[in-house]
Image 1: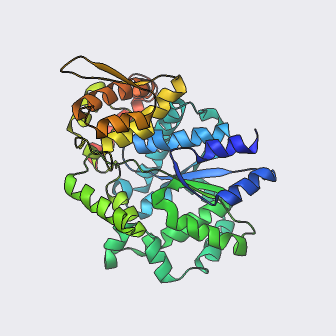
Image 2: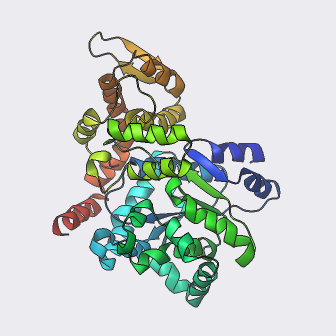
Image 3: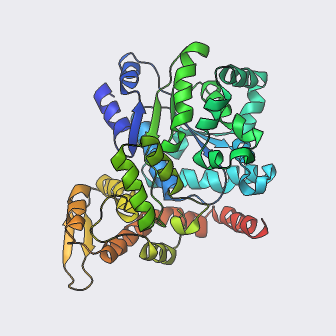
Length: 380
């Protein structure tokens, strides 16, 4: 594949940032093999942001000839007390429901589950032995305590003194993961940016190379409200990038806030119910979670199929076709498309898109994993 096509695939949405494009192009032009990884905390059900947006980028990377890896971060999840802080449960979910959901989502967006390597962090650490600890110390020796505190998630920073020491070692562990895996293309949402910047700074000094960090869009939660939306827009208007990014992290689609998320195995009834309740202010296109979902989840899927986005006006029966997202956004801004009509059209597309994943978990081999997850949620 030529360099320009590889760059196009890597940079297209849902990519929001590559640090740096120059370094990426240099690697491609000089024939340096690109090795990717993305890490996942293991917690609840997999939603559209994790399952569809993230896996679409993995599929793009596969098409660009990049070796892709999914890193199931069980120890990291343990540190952050996911699934009640029970490591055995975390490992079971990682290699059961979570792995299945990621691979089925990758298949649904045109990726190849057989071509991606799935790694359980604890098994990898055991295999690497003391070398991982050496890498962890190399990273740690390059960081100040204040830098680490600034780099943990906004939720952790707001806990203040309540942050455990384990949460402080999370960031240097995350950076050590990159170099222990031999990765030169770490990938994550925009919420992983601070850790990746550290990797870019530390890499040449301690590991002999500079990775290229890829950050994809964080899907907005359906639970967004007008007050929060106005705060976000104000931070954006002021040019306060850090405040804006941290606010986005707080209102992204989240498995821990079920009403904010559509899960990849949701039934048609659940999808319709959640979308009907979703925040979608008339004529407002910025920070609109339904439009966000249409742009980053539905339109790319329709484009792969060569189909248009169709909205039917429930009152008049008028049918409108939109070839690209920008046309739909313009019509919505002009109030030519009603929020409820947009929601119902979106629901039908999501139902169709997720049908293979849903069948896998409700009727197929994945049923046992979903039942196990439901049992864990009841008992814990």
